[in-house]
Length: 165
Image (tube, rainbow, N blue to C red; front, side, top):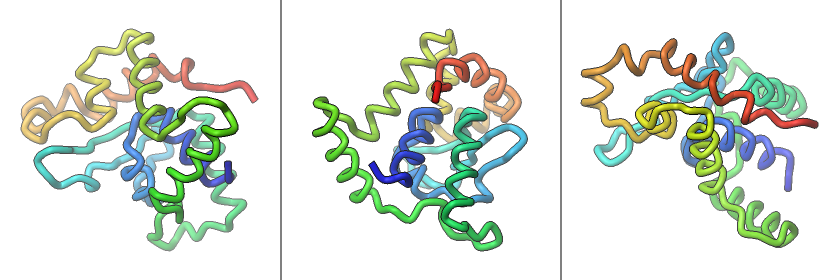
């Protein structure tokens, strides 16, 4: 699997975000001090709404290494990843053939939610990480879904999402 797709896969499995959300990320969407990813501007429709998620410290370090390798222009407002969704899907299909089982970007989102459940995170926070909270709920309950509250919940699962090299 190409390095870009590997980094995308790591962001997917440690954040619970959708593939389109990850592919739309720009450097300004990442808050270093919290390892927070702001995807609140990705979905403007009624059926999907993105809010905030987080990635592990390990993922941030690997992401920054990748950006250095490709000489990413941090001043430019370009996306972190140049791959299209179709290219990522094709790379996952090729990896699936080699692994002997079906692997899709959505599979990594399901792994994330399962790890959150194992860590004892309440469903409402898992739904928030995965962008399944409506704007009206966020507006009425902002303190429950503040970056600080969400980070505190994410810390419960972080160890389960860190991989040995």
